Image 1 (cartoon, rainbow, N blue to C red):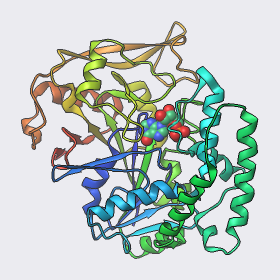
Image 2: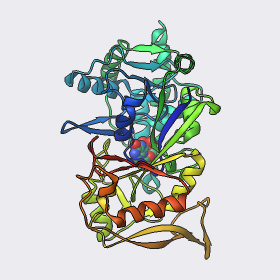
Image 3: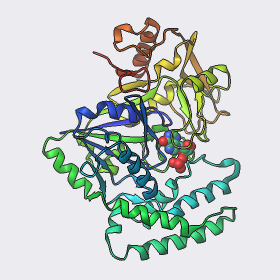
Length: 425
Ligand code: IMP
């Protein structure tokens, strides 16, 4: 069986968690392929909100296997907190949650290094979530990391000590004011490692190959968004992993020719949290309305998200890089009440009109060129059928489909599982 992918096409926070949860009944296995607890995947059902950081979004479905792939970085302390929340909900995850032995572990000193690195950057800071993501992936590519499989070995604490000591020297080198009590952090860390050990560690690429041979259906769940990809995002204001489709191959061991559908998720407008260029960002009432109505605050850090109009230049680029086959549009309901909507269809780049994402999209080089569309006033949140959606909303959808040359097969009109309209096509 081919493996389907589901990933974000903007700067993250598109609503991947909700859609994975909605799609889970169609799949036997949900597999996270990159990122770590910098992600915050929000699911809403039965009137309750659930936020997952590392655990795949299929965890609330009892017959589904949830796999944390080799491309993910795990903070045992945060992972343990997620498990405690699942315990409180009565979710029995012991038989359904597996972890790749090749996934890397975030140490307490990785988090401290993240903080020291950001503090040393001053105004040029990335706006990291400070979860230790960058330093952990640096140790992975630098071939110094500690993997989940290592903690099954008797001498792993020696490896841990050597790496933590090295990190402490690096933190001192940054020469910034970071207060910490490593002993205390380590107590929590080693305690959480014991909790992690209660879960099943597997050779996940082998598991997935066998599952494919046996006809199991698999959905690979991405984190963050394509514009935060380490190679194709707005570098250096990106995360430290490949958030795009290729990341599912390296982060799970899926062969490229085994990929089936690529579901690309985007919001009907654009948001970004943290620093970095954002051509269509709004600093006016419209941006404030999007932030307020859309509750645009980070699920992991609580930071306010920057808001702006939809950027089709960036979206088209993300569709190309990922090989998107179907689009899913989120938060259309947030745009209700706007008299007109603007959609960026080209950039003025150093005096020239261009339709592709250039090397540099900083404000001094790029000015968005907009097409104006009519808005709608109806509240969409109780709508359950495509036929109920206002004409102007459907015109917006058709305009995007024509520009992107891809079908929008699902539209989401609210955070709840039930507020999802699958179009008949
Ligand atoms: P880091 O991955 O925590 O180092 O953060 C790097 C950049 O990616 C920062 O601008 C973060 O705000 C952003 N980022 C990381 N994870 C997410 C996410 O899940 N949603 C949105 N932005 C994210």
